[in-house]
Length: 266
Image (cartoon, rainbow, N blue to C red; front, side, top):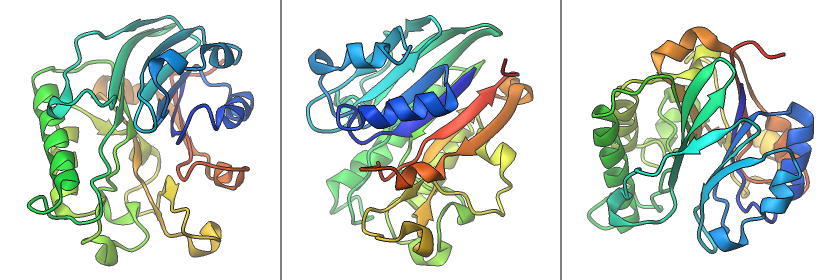
C-alpha cells in the first residue's frame, strides 16, 4: 500500500495539484488535512476521477477538514470521539482493506496553537495541549494493532525537525509542552515511521513558511507532518520520501506531501 499524507490547504483550490501528485506517485491512499470544504460541497466527482472510489471525510467551511481517499475498499470508523468538546473536523479514521491485510488509518489535523505558547493567556494554545492530551488518553486505552496514524500534527518534536532548535524552543510547534505531549502520544503504541528511514541526527522538514520568499535558500523548515505505525507494521515499511519539489509548484501549499510504502509495491 502506497500512502500519502498532505496538508493541502484547500482541496478545491489545489485539486489540480492533487491530480499532478497522483499522476506522479500513484498512491493507493491519500490522507488530506485542511481541506477547507463542507461535506455538501466536497468535490467527489473530481476526486473519483483520479481513481479514488472510496472516500471518508469530515469538513467545514473555510478551515480545518480531513479526508481519506482510497483506491482500495475502506470501512469508515464511526465511533471516533469529539475532541475537546468541539466537532471541528480534525480527525477521520477508516479501515483500509489492503491486499496484505486490513490496516486502520487515522488522519489528524492537530490545532496550530496560535502564536503565544502560554495556555493561561492563549486559548488556542490551551486547546492544542488539551487536544493532544485527550487523543493520548484515548489511544492508551485502544491497544492499536496494524494501525497507521498520519497527519499535520503542528508539532516538530525532535531537535533536527526544525531549522534551529535553540531559537525555536519558545516558538509554538517546538516548545517543550508540545513536544513532551506528542512523545507521550507516540508512546501509546506507535513508531515514528519517517525517522525509521531518516536518522534523528539528520534534518527532516515538511513545511516552509509562505513568508520565506526563497524557501530553498533559507531552508527554515519544520517537520510538522508525520506518519506513525504500530510495531507490527515496522517490518513492512519499504520506503519513505518527502516531496520537497512540490513546494515549488504553482500556488503550492506551505506543506509538502510525505509518501510511505507499506509492503512491497507491484
